Amino acid sequence: MTEATDLAERAGDRDPRVGLRAVAALRRLLEQLESVQVRSARNQGWSWQEIAAELGVSRQAVHKKYGRH
Amino acid sequence: MFERFTKDARAVVQGAVEHAERAGAGSVDAEHLFLALLDREAGRASFALAALGLAERGDAVRQALGEARRRAGLSQADAEALAGLGIDVSEIVARVEEAHGVGAMSGDRKVKGWSGRRSFGRGAKEILERALRIAVARRDRHIGDEHILLALTVRPGVSGEVLADHGVTYESVVRVLYGGGEAKAG
Image (tube, rainbow over all chains, first blue to last red):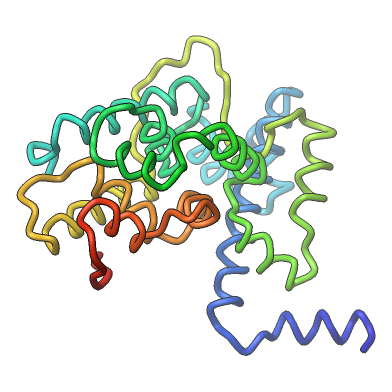
């Protein structure tokens, strides 16, 4: 079996528990990554507007989520 | 709910808040409750952990919890589920730490001067709610540190996984505390 089909098979795992757990874990990973990158951008003097534009969300959304910290 | 907590359970909750503050965590998490339980030398949960041999392996447990925190609080089972999608969590953590420092993915921030009160995160709230449900199901009149430990064993996540790795499960805790076997509650 090639690596690609192996991956495709796993990604479509029949057991919803495994698939859902992967989604939840990915979301958590994503949240932490976003937090790291937003803080890094702020430390480098980026404006909320610039950060929001890169993330593809509104300035208000990103400021509300990270503005206090 | 808190008025029904025993002195030992309150000490665990207080200890969890202190752990979160020391780490610079944004909120009190389930793992902080577990760390606070490990610190205790009195109480029914401490007795159970000692009886199951966990007390003497405290350092290994703390290390496992610290490693999980460094990978965004993901358990081994989470990491395996992601590996199933072709995502290597340790590789991601290594690269982020290379650029942003060790512990960058932990969510802990050592912000100077930030001494605001920590709120309880969803995971920690779930543990306390489960502890209450377990106490009710067992017809115990108070919520003790042993109910917090039992709740940690049944909630999927890092703490439950680390406890299970060391042979501490709902069943084994019930066995050493109450003797005999019985159905799982909560």
